[in-house]
Image (tube, rainbow, N blue to C red):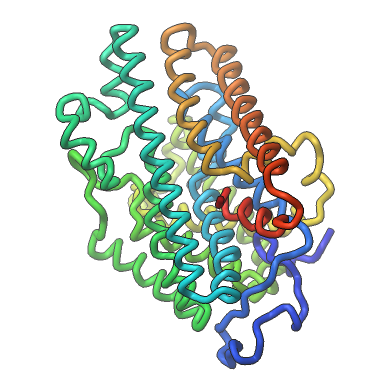
Length: 418
């Protein structure tokens, strides 16, 4: 097993000659030198991003026995934290190096191009998803689908609702992650610019904004009422923390990550979180949770990224780094290949997963809703997602020649940048 001193998501090891020239270097302790690309892909990033996409798909299906396989039932965090952290990590690694090699202006242009691609994907997803729900509701004469999927307001005022959808204020059910990702990526250029000079200050400012969000209830309003399901003012902390880890923060935390004290603190916290989640599903043991802890802890707010959720993710990440080395042979096994491929094409697979989740919801509601059918729907959905990822990978391999191999690797790492 390799040393725990390696970065959280596998920043490649480079020597001094791989770093920024002296003219770009800084004497400050928290200034960063962007690493260059490693000779091999970091498959742990792809693996866990693919896992997050699979878990998001299963969590979007109606609750059943199979949903007990997802991590949200065993602690405070879920697949969303995994997805956002890895997104921040990979975006900072890829575009941070572009900022070093091509300059801030060119790197920012590349980032905004990626933001536009994600926005177009969101609009396309919204349109097709809307058509899918409307067709099913009309074809089977069941208007409850429109209400359950959150498109009733669109049917009442389509002209106003479309404008609100383009402004990212109106979103049907299960379409909240991409708008959050769009906003976070939109502010990536100034984040990287500042992090290149003062990495720790950037993270401190992110923590400060997170604290102000809780203190003054900062949020973005949604249409027709309420707020964003994932508050960007709060969730930016996880995104920025991922970027900070990618640009040297994880290496600087290596001594902490390798400490046995950290190990047992993480284990203790995960066990405590598991115990609390058991009280949600087993009423007989609810009285064993002290009232003072219950009053202090609840509600565990997902919208504003409750600190308990953030800490739960950190504990999972620390244990993952400790016990899953970047050179683990299983990362290249045929059994994990589908998950890795899904992680390499995250944007496309996420959109497909949203379509499949509603299709599965329809099958379970209209045909059968038992455990066997739920397992079949989940399995077929994952097979479709994996097959689509294989097709995307095959197409990219045959259309991009060997001379652009490094660029293709960066594109995959960033989640499918064209």
